[in-house]
Length: 207
Image 1: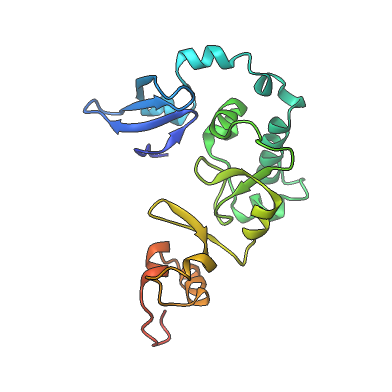
Image 2: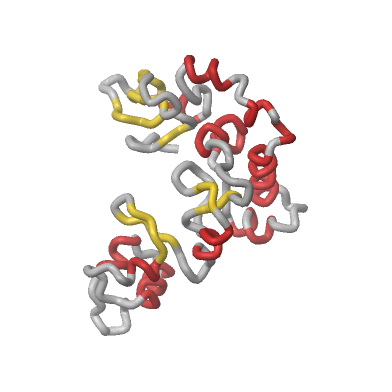
């Protein structure tokens, strides 16, 4: 894993890389005020998830401490089962297709919980914004059934310049001059989202 500025690891958001090799300036997103200088390796392996103050205050958090009785824990466990348990009925649609769980979440329910927080509403479940990719910070949210229906395989989410929306919505962008079908075709050929959406068609069959 490569530590990226702007990304979140556990509850730490990376602000910048220091001149000291392998260390990063991070801010705790739980309190929004505590900042620390942290080794990249500690961020990667989940050795530190948040500032000490927040770690102490959340150690008694009922959603975390409920453990195996919580919906969040069951969602985390089910995610692991469909990605890594070959005996799971869902494995063929996840693990067998290369869908993975990032190392930090795979090894720590607490890291998973601190990244996503508690389920906001009873009907919400885990959803990947880009269904072709795995479970990792930035690609997973708590979502309603309506949101998940919109994210079905024929309506792919694309993120361009920090904005995420389905292909059919990108097709309506004023700078997009191609159809969603052309965009789908380009994505299958390995084009990057921005290039797939905004490159004009050459009408030569090579789009």
